Image (cartoon, rainbow, N blue to C red; front, side):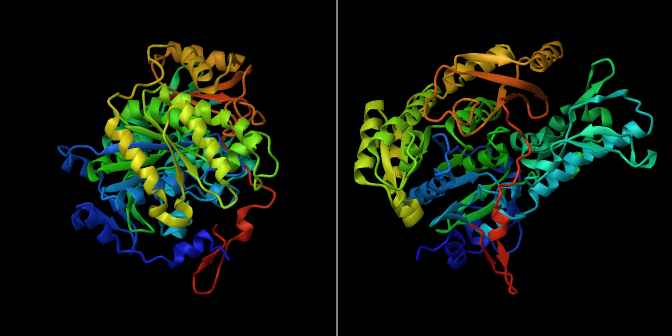
Length: 555
């Protein structure tokens, strides 16, 4: 019987977190312990190691996700373990899970099999409280907005133009559209409101892109929460609560140190979704990891058209990062799904060949950023050698190295071939990463560039509301910000039903938002929403805990 992820994790022999810190050359003064196996690192360590040379940054992304799964987090962890087996001081910099997917359908974010980050139960549940702190900080702004309106509204806030939603770290579709302030004057002023999941919060994005606590305060102060009756943007600074919001985040801004099943150090910090936000772990954690390791493996959410594009056009640009290689994770099962196969556990070379068009596109896209690409074939038990050979031949045609990756079953040992190819790609790369577009373009031009170059679309259709916001952006001097497109993760297009490599489509931008604190413009494509719902049978039904505190059913 195949063991579940949680069974494997619970059988693991973890080292005390102080031993993991020692591997990184850290002293007891450099971190705060959260129990035996978790710690928060002092963000001032960036100053301590300022003169130390950075390690090599490797991005792990994937083909367009399918219900069959790709295993991006698993490969990230396995690759890190493999590099350590080869003698490199390697660590991963990953995102924190959200409780929405954990109790919904997608699951956690700690990898799987023998390539996991532990303690997985803690990480997938409340961890060190970062998401709670981010949610409270966000909702403090919401509470003060409505309190300000009740007590005279000196800022002349237009209650029909408040853009700041409330947040909750749970999938709850009933909160997408609400009315607040009912019950008379004691309960405030009635108005329409809505909720988004915490990981879509601009507080989350601002924390993940901040370079310091000072920078975070500045970002918070710039957050636009709405407009006054004359159309002037209003910010958190106008509410006079910048310091209070930042104070709630004093611990949340510190990266979290944990370990893999093979006792390899991992920094987990921040968790924006890549379909509705920028989809990367915190800049502070990534930069600190680069000071602590020879190789740093980081992951961007969902496929290369979402997480990787945002990582390269937003995070790398804001953080002055220079990645050295991109790993694209693909599975035989997912590629067959893209090729129209219904039965994924049976050899189907025809469907696989058709589905490979999706991999082709993502390879082409990553090369546009001037980066070498390595393909990781994440192995499943039903895969056949003929199917692997077909992928190998296709990658050879594309001029990219490819490795069979068996890290789920074998841990770091199953990622040795991949690790060797990554090292070779990094060592032989003489090119410098470059972003896709210039910030001098207008927001509409940047969006069109992403749609045509990355998605493969013919163009963009802007709604009347989107055009109106684009005019506000230009009027208020935000034209030079990068773009964060929110769209379905299930397709290269904005239509979830278009699998493979669709062509001949346009992308509809229904809404545009200014995330001045985060430092980007959000373009909402198609019918994307920022508050997911639970499935008919949520994962919550499978999760249990016994009288001794042992959790079961958590994947």
